Amino acid sequence: MKKGIITLIVAVLVIMGALFLGRTYFSRTGGEKVLLLSGNMEVTETDIGFKLPGRVTALLVDEGESVSKGALLARLDNGELASVVAQNRAALEEAETRLAELKAGSRPQEIGQAEANLGAQQAELTRLTKDYERAEMLHENGAISTAQYDAAKGSYEERRAQLQHALESLSLAREGPRSEDIEGAADRVRQALAAKRVSEERLKDTLIYAPISGVILRKNVELGEIVNQGTPVYTIGDMASPWIKVYVKEDKLGLVKLGQRAKISSDTYPGKAYDGWVSYISSEAEFTPKSVQTQEERVKLVFGVKVRVRNVNDELKPSMPADVRIMLE
Image 1: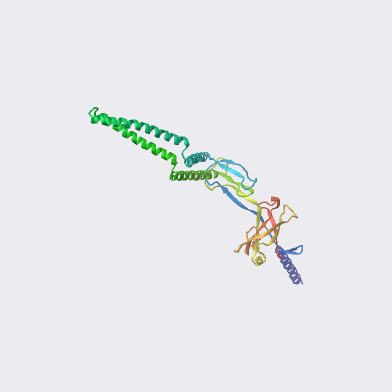
Image 2: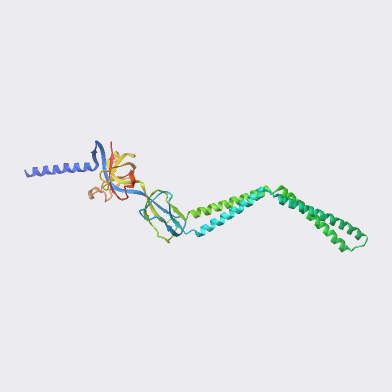
């Protein structure tokens, strides 16, 4: 008699255990068949740092603050790079001015000056030509020495050379600069422009801007600290699209599909459900994490599944416990 009662009690307990385990995974809410799972809220974290090493001179936000994409967050000491930018800008302006002068050609005043110089050289050559002819005649008659004759001849030939130079100068002034000179000046402008852009980009690298909108989760350095290139200064959490990683038993994995609708709830906002969807299903099985199942359940294989959530008004926070109901129908 006692043996029959014990057997009945064991059967009842087995049935109740089966019902409990089934409820862990399946439930019907409003006529919908769902898969019940639990996890913690997580967000995509982005570490941001400087592209250059240097001393931190400004940290403009603190942990817990919300930032918008493109907001200025931190600054390095940039005095030296700012000077380089100023020098390159001045060099570019000088090169551009020189190119503009060459393209404009000779000014009327320069042409007039060259013409006046040519006229003066012609007049002086006319005078020296007469002196030279007179000296030549006197030297033939023995009236002047050879040295006097040579001096008159030298002045005449020197003035002829100066007249030729004046003619060439006037021709150059009228024709303007050569195309090769203009192209060379244009090359120098391009070189100066490239140098300016490189220095400006390096100057921008002394600033950190938020790559995404989110919340500052961690501030990893302090004001005045010397940091290396790429050292994380801030860690930003993307609060717009948090996710929950849950674990599905191997025999239930076939019920879960990418894009499948889900409802997420948390103890912080009882009775409120957030829309979500399955965004990732692991292709490799793993043992259940200790924090998820009991000791006897840990030996069973599970698959990690990520469920994205539409975070209305940024109400959901990292590490917040949440329940997930994946809609199976």
